[in-house]
View 1: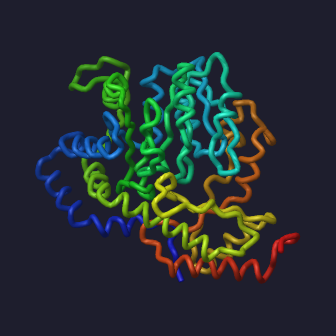
View 2: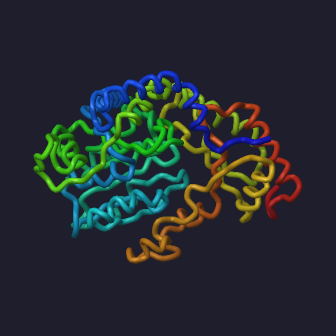
View 3: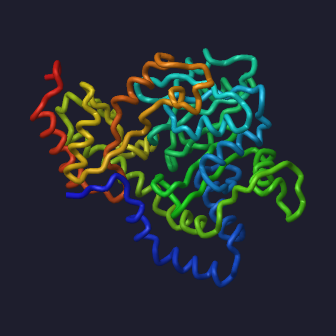
Length: 378
């Protein structure tokens, strides 16, 4: 059968001719770092998000790290984020010298403001809400709360490119929004890439310096900086793909609807909530189900035998990773994150997925549970 989990190669086929022409021109001009193509994409991305500026960087992890550095966050500070995020969110905090403070997720996998409030201390400098799996956290109340307390709101939008809620795009709610352009993202480069968006001229200026050894002009180093720049070859690919982003995200929502239809009645699964085709608050970077009865891995193996590739995002919560044992959390600290890590399964989801693929996946899952139902389920 052969159904891919993600398909960045299909997106490449769409932009190939335009992108290769751009690459040839870049080669002739010899501008392989910075230049007009990076500026062109940054301007287009900022305009798309209705943000003041976009600053391209080397990857999504650097986007988070440099955003925190631009805020002056460092040793002695605390930054609150999710226990059920990718490790990069925590590592970006750690490498500033600050301490990651984790909170549990809700039933819908997202952070809840009540948990964040309970985790605040006198050392809290920022909070990083994670728009996990492509679903936006409604940050309207968060924004007012954080501004009132002087706590910086830095969005982790790595999985939410193109999502919006209440007329505001992911990345435009907080003081900064951080994006990853890893190839399988909703807006993915053909290699690594990332960006920070902000409507603060002060933050934009600091970020442009921080990404480029501490200065915007050659040999003028105003800050202790870093080397993290989006290159023009990747910027060109992103600019080509941006024209298709809304169409591809709409297709992902359609695919989510197909899954709900073809997995209806499988009581052993917990599906994402229904999303209307025009509801841009969820762009389904991932389609994540929960598998009951401790049979997630068994189902995954069976699907792989049939050529259906799946993934688990993420198998171990941050607080149980050896790298962050020093934070002082342990098993039982975040029960939802721990329980869901043992149950979640990401099914194929990408812009080239067809309903016949989803129907085949649904049939295999139905067959798996029909042959051996989960005890206690009907």
